[in-house]
Image 1 (tube, one colour):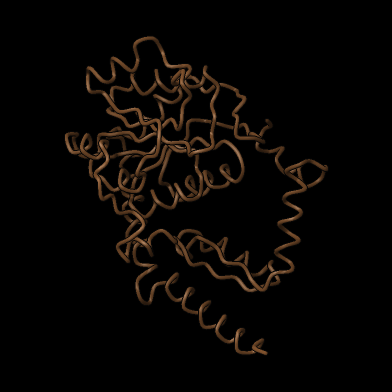
Image 2 (tube, rainbow, N blue to C red):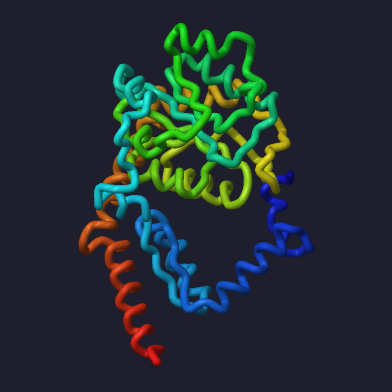
Length: 298
């Protein structure tokens, strides 16, 4: 693990991650062009700069999952998940949804702090902890699962969870996330404010974008992990609780975050409609590939 300011060292030293980045860059140079799952309105300055510095064609056609939603597939839950029924009984914008992706493996000590924070925040929650072994979830405080279930404080999901459907539910008011790009885009489109906890890969860049857009608040994570097994340091429960309180309060900061999220969601929905930036970019990509196919046809 290392401070985020040290991540660039991978470009200077021969590390496993650095070698992977080199391969990606070499592949980009050999490619006809680059297709990105993003949209112009979310990061216009970055898009313009990228097009200037990259000596290749670039198309920004995201958020891709929204095209599937528009077509009525990809996020259909034919058998309603139990968590959605549970959400039906919660107050609007009251629930914290906590999910750190399918690959993150926290230390048991960190699991303990997350559990205590969710319980002591006095906010209803859904927590996706991923797959567990026969021993169950290691690190949960004594009696935690029983209290949560008995007092109806929240839900713990140990398998697959319908993330988009959860985020779309009117009861969800905040998303505690590792800042994976798909998760960030889904929250942006749906208009759910974020509590950011970046861990590895490009997560810290995504968190910075969330900060610049004014659509979230961070728990204060500042250590970049090389692998999915997160080795520390431990984020204490109080920092998590404070982030939840900031996001769910009636303060001017919280109101501004919620308003920014709402306004950005409106823009995000329009980009895949006819005439929208991603719609036009995807159309241009398709037409160009048609021309390339005709030119290269034997």
